[in-house]
Length: 71
Image (cartoon, rainbow, N blue to C red; front, side, top):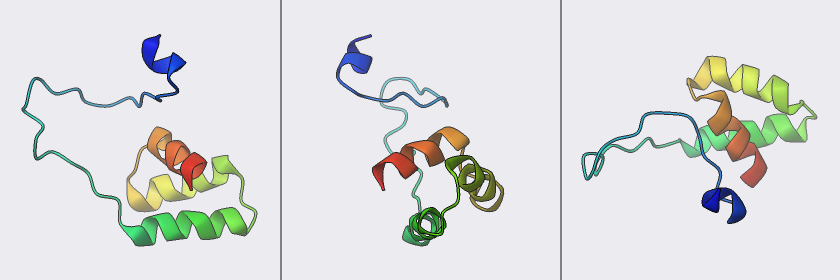
């Protein structure tokens, strides 16, 4: 509830224990974000973009939705 009040979205995924995830990061290539922006400019719906990007990039739908809101 506290995170929700502060506008912090939660994404489903693995949760690691204390300090085990120091080097466990996922990098999203700028080309992937650029492709998402292009699809958005071309008028594709959020659902269509999530479907296309989910197949080609392997990124979860929740993360794609989050990225679409910020980009």
